[in-house]
Length: 155
Image 1 (tube, rainbow, N blue to C red):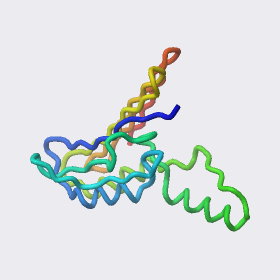
Image 2: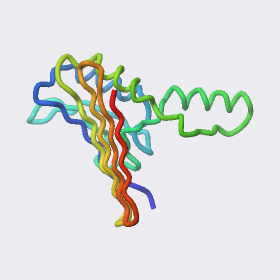
Image 3: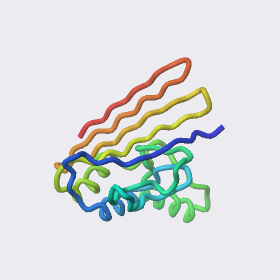
């Protein structure tokens, strides 16, 4: 059974920044779900905002896989005539995400939030905040009938 959920992007009330540049930066960072869907700018009656390209994503996360690390391993595997192997170190570094996104934020902060679930067995909440000053925080909480696990990173 696969995990499905939603990924949304929110801004603080005082936010000022370049949405197109932020959207491009998020897409360059890496893969944010199991199908490599992309962020895009959407115009609504409430104005322009960043949205994920699907309403229900397979394996959405705020711990994206690094495009650079994936490309490097795939290239090395091709040269060595083997299948690529991806370890835990393939995630984009948190500091890189903050640096890439914050340079396009003048004031305020941007939040990427995820809710993921698998049937009635697992519920996962994740949040990534990036501030204009280059700092941020990333948190996750996972709940199953037998355990709860929480993490927090701060830059």
